[in-house]
Structure formats: C-alpha cells, structure tokens
Length: 328
Image 1 (cartoon, rainbow, N blue to C red):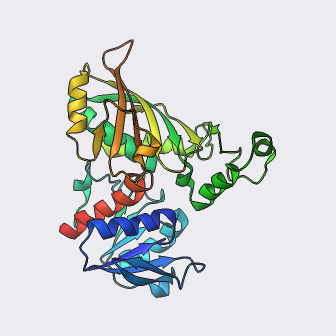
Image 2: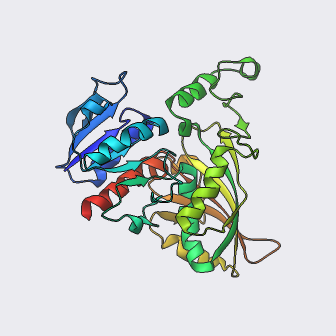
C-alpha cells in the first residue's frame, strides 16, 4: 500500500507522519509532498529517510490514500489529480467540507459515511472536532437542541508563522508589545486574548465561528441545530478549549452525562482536575471538565472541553480515517 502526505513539512503534516508511524502498518510505502521551498529535504518515517517532492501534477502517481494538509487552494488544485489516479483523498482544509456529496468525517462519530465510491473525505475544523466529540454521546443520551459555544483557539491553528510570532512577542514587555507592529494577528497575542479568531464575514461573525455552525450540524446530522458561537484567539501554542452551554430535549442527569462521556472512545471526563490546554497537548483524547446543570433549566448542561488541535483536531483524525480505509 502507498500513502502520499501532502504538506508533509508543516505543523499538521509532521504530526500526520507521527500518527502514521503509530497507527498504520509498518510496511506502507510513503511519498511526501510540499512546496518547492521544502522539496529535496528528507524526513524520517519508521526510521526510513523519505525524500520530499515538490507538489506538482507531474510528480503525482498512483497512491492508495493521499493525506492533504497544504491549505484550501492546494487542495482544490491538486486533489483531483490524486483522485484520478485512484487515491482516496483525506483533506484537512475547509475547501470541501460543506459540499453535500463530500462526507465530513470525525472518526468515532460518522466514519460509516465512507463508502467504496467515496474518494474525497473532508476533515473538520479543529475547534468543531473537539466540541462534537464531547457532544455526540450527550446527544445520543439526551437529544441535543441548541448550543452556545465559546472557543479559545491556540495560535498553532494558524500555522508555524503564528507560533513563531508568539514566541518573539513573549520576549517583549507590555509597552513594547503595544507598540509592536510586527505581529501575525491584528493585536499582540502574547499575554493576551484577542476577541476574534479568523476573518469577519458579512454577518459580523467570523469564518471560524460559522464553521462551528455548519460543521456541527453536518457531523451530528442535526440540520436544525441552533448554534450561537463566539471564538477568541489566546496566547497558547497548542490546545483549543471550548466552553459550551448545551440545551437538550430531555432533562440532564449529571451521573448519566459523566457515564456516557467516559464510555465514549476518544473522550475523557476529568472530575477532580481542571483540564487545560497543557493537559491536552500530545493527548489523543478530548478532555471534558466542569460539568454543570443549568441554573435556569435542567435541560441545560454546561461544560468545558479541550483538545490538541494538531492531533484530534487535524492529524490524528485524518490518520484514523486512513486506518479505517486500510482495514476496509
């Protein structure tokens, strides 16, 4: 079996390689692709040096699976080349997520949407991914009606340049930070919280907020789910956290809620310790804590969830889907 990794040298791409080493058979043959700047480098996979090729149509051959993490423009331009050669394409960008014919898959929730004729599979947004993993077992038990999620997104969700910007800013004092114009975001991110993640759309919600709206409905298969999202960017390298107030059709019982969360693969409820981005970093699970029944309504459940946005939020889920395809 041959697997191509597109965008292999980026933050998510390198995590995809690590997850492939851990989750997939050792005999798989890997082919790595990146931009012309990275072409010619070598990366190790299963202790083997693999040459990074430039991503262009001439270099694309027959592969069983292609894992894309190179941005939406590259996905739109090159995914069809891989599909035409017989590859399944698992795409980490937002390019295809809302196309009706493209399954938006979270492994553990809806991988059964992948059929033998499915060649293009979309990986959800990293914030949505952690949130729906916590919501799915609760929905199955209490029937979800609406959610009000407030997300705190780490800078690694914006890529290597954002991480490097944070590290530089952490060396500055307050006055220098406020005067600094060499920032990745619109405002300094070190020692700070910016009340906007992503770009504003016509309705004054950001594109990151609207991803939660559309993607949670599609993944959970609740077309009428009411979603009131807010997203902020925080000065943390890794780990997206979400405070969520969820309203169900049935009264919520805390003990039952804890039970279904702990029995859902890929989710852990922390009762005695507050789960934080530091705990989530390099953790394969979505961590849930601060479970509370609503003050005004027993059909409301408030909770906090946090996950590694580069793992379950991106690379891990993509490779879990690949593992599912390998076993089919």
